[in-house]
Length: 496
Image (cartoon, rainbow, N blue to C red; front, side, top):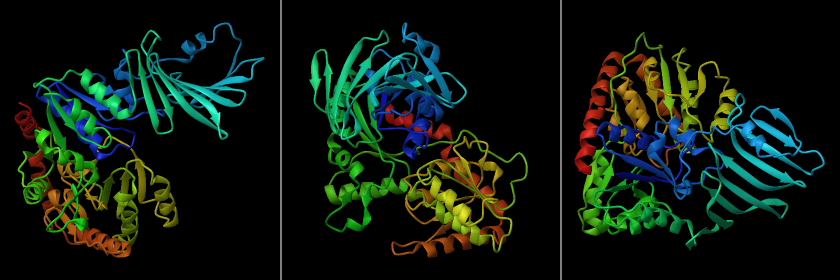
């Protein structure tokens, strides 16, 4: 069995989660049984809805908090009718407003606020119970009640002090006692005094053997607990981002990225490290040898793969650009908006479609309104882009840091040239400057205005000077390196 460990997942997941989803497909393709373990809490959503959304099978997912129960990973199927049966003989009135339902009980100072999966269905995700104006409990459901949270008023706020996790039959499996960041877990036969101990206990319960492989995608807060309890299992570390700080590194000392420092310090216990590009692989090997005098096993395996080249079924939309990412500050999508607005002065029909969700969405909406560019710069939300890339003429990236860049791989798989900054590792991996796009030279002191201007110039150059047909063909050639069969072969080699 291959166990893959991560922290969280969301509707606007990062490249790490999408990389895991790609890996799940690859491991299925080679007949390798695998589990993907998530260790964060998900009070606002059911984890199954988010894992299923990006391609995991329910049978592949382990959630830390239900691992110790007999509740399965499942979509929400618990209904309002089932909830109403729990009211017993109490009289009640229900009033629905979109995806919420409020139940009131005559002659009572309490009410239930029910949060539904969506506005159309009657499936219940959670129920908040309010008494005398104070939140006292929340119940969470999938096909049964999976856990409850208990609250008490403190400083005029609802203070969470306990969680209770249930088995299918409603019996208590274990409890979490919490006081802000201090937690304790009470089991019938033991007490654990931190989340790290809970993770370690879960790993120990897996009863790993030499035939098992543990792959850690994120080590923050869980790496040590996993490695200390993995027993004879082989441990692999996947590196998803730049692994060191260049500005704080000199001939005598290297500052590792905090995400990887522990994993690098424990190299004696790590069977292999995985980078997604040869460039990062060679750099990391050189640094391990120079700064630590060691030569651990480091392999290059792309975090994604391409099943087939996507060729357009009709003519690509003229002068159309696409970008796809989490809408996060480090992706600098605002630079792309500004650049397209400026490019419009020379290429009057240039357009940009922005795919993804994230914290910067409101900011981008405001910018689009301020620039009056909503008719040619559009926010398209989160979508499956498999068949969409090939409708466009080129891909635009504002990111200044990509460990690999799944969307870049998907873009070249649809023949798109790419415009992006000359930064490690993704853009350098997928863009051959002047052949299938443009790499823009940057430096730390380069102001936003200059970056936007460079992006603008490259957009104009692409659509007025470049041989787009040749650029498209070169991207297809680049994409051949990432065919699924080749990636499957690499995973088979390292896992055998």
